[in-house]
Amino acid sequence: MNDERNDLIREIRNQDKKLQLIARPFGAYINIVDVDDVHFEDAFLSHDFKQRLAVSQFEEALSLKFNLVVAKMGFRDTQWGRLAIIMFAIWCLCTCFVCFQKPDFLNVSIA
Image (tube, rainbow, N blue to C red; front, side, top):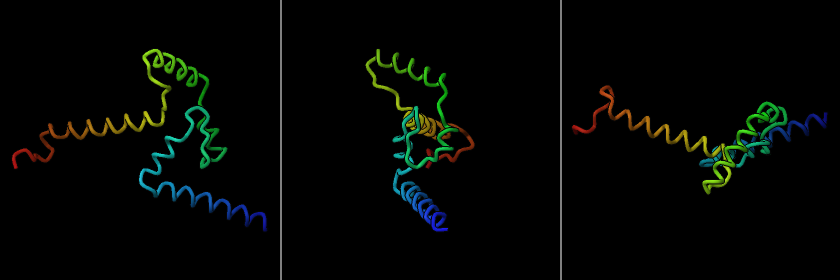
């Protein structure tokens, strides 16, 4: 029973660390950026979850080829987590700008 109790205490502390990280401003973003893109070496992910997120050999080879092409252009290796967040932000901004051209959107240019 003591072992179970200690396991539960460790799990509660681990979950509390996750919640504190998410509660900080941009905490979840920092967690995503810090994850190793290929091996998912993140202290907060369980081993079972890491196995489900494992990168296939095809994805790893494609990432390597992409990084070789980009390195010839003078850029550094791609951080896929950060790139996904940046692309999502660009997509959100573009969709917001498109809404100003729609006739069903609130027209603030008259006021």
